[in-house]
Amino acid sequence: MPEDAAAPRRRALGGPGVVLVVVYGVLALAATGRSVLQITEYFDRAPLAYLLSAFAAVVYIIATVSLALGGRWVRVGVVACTIELVGVLVVGAASYVVPEAFPDKTVWSHFGAGYGYVPLVLPVLGLWWFRRVDRAAHEPAGDATVTS
Amino acid sequence: MLAPLAYGVVALSAVLCLVAVYYAFRDRLIDNLVVILSLLLEVGLVVQMGFGLAGVGRITDGAERATYIAYLVTLPLIPVGTAFLAIKEKSRWAMGSLAVGAFAVAVMSARLLQIWNASA
Picture 1 (cartoon, rainbow over the protein chains, first blue to last red):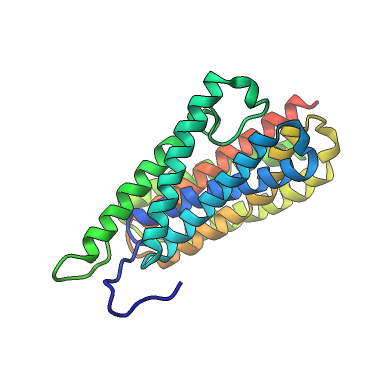
Picture 2: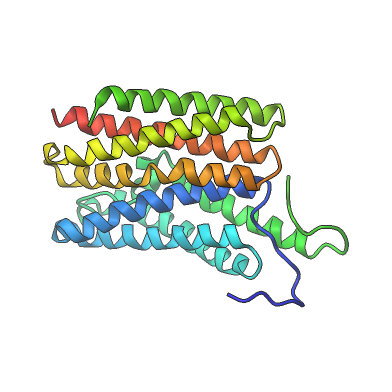
């Protein structure tokens, strides 16, 4: 995505953003690898769960890239984190209410309990961080990079 | 999968995590000790991937096998990525990212061991 020279520079990768990139990156790698194997090897066993896992993996990849690149990707990152938050809340609730629809777990099942509830906390942290980055970019003077 | 190697990987990643946390509190940047620990961990993870994939036939449960292979293949990417970020980032958060990455390696390697031992 091209950077508009007139737009304020919103650099997301800096300070706590680096830690978020690592957490998102690890989750993206683990979820992608697992969902690829689930879909290619035994998709018929739990199609909904495996498709949701794959979708979650794509969202995590987009969020990781957005955090790493910043700039205009901040908006994309906000959308990704919002989808992620809605996903973990809806799928988390559904996995308790209609457990028969999820014969196998997804990353969002039971509000991310299988991953130490990291999937539930992460989008909140991501949205908070993107908000900080956006605010810092619109400050009248100084470096737009958020470092602490 | 070599169980002693897997235990060694868990221990080494725990040490790297503790060192990174200490460095973060002391506001220190990446140095030779951290690079050597990261390299050792990387070598351990690559060897573990080789042995782990060679013995994947032992795991019969499909869901567990998916997790096992996914973790084996993705684990070696973590120390490389976090070390790269730690070199690029010039603040204490660099060591924070390294600590988080090492912690993730420890947890994921422990999960690999759990799957491996359960399939015995």
